[in-house]
Image (tube, rainbow, N blue to C red):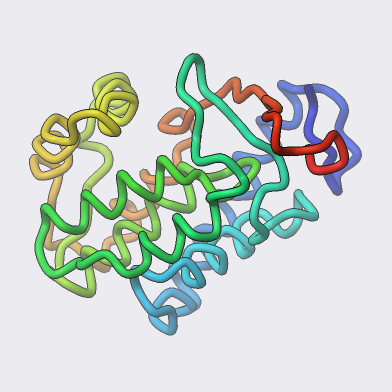
Length: 206
């Protein structure tokens, strides 16, 4: 299924290419403009603002909560009926040390609040928290993409693996543009979401 987009693209490959090009350009603007410095790290509002900034030229839903239930393989992200409550709980989670920050990151991934672009916006959100609380960020060039995706898939059950992986990539180069932009690489994010229905939701909500 091709997501409806402002670009009028109806080919999945073409849309993916355009999306990555545009979101990377916007991510650079996000970094150089100082926009991130004005956000309250760790809040859902800050994440939605990041998502809106990255994808507002592509999707109408940029920065807005998804209106469908989505799954990746056999894993279902937080159902719509619980999404807002889950986000409030995540926002209230502590973030004073590395373990707490990664636990918060894992929970936000499970929530998957947007229809598309969760991985890229949430990685910037993660670095924003790490920078504020620990004066560190993740050097994504040091993180193997396959290991990262596998660790993230397993993190809802056991988060030790993703903690070890990301800790190895920590750097104090918090203002290095090349370190920052690597996290926007589209190959780090999940693809192939499916929409599913629940008995509690009508077709008009999906």
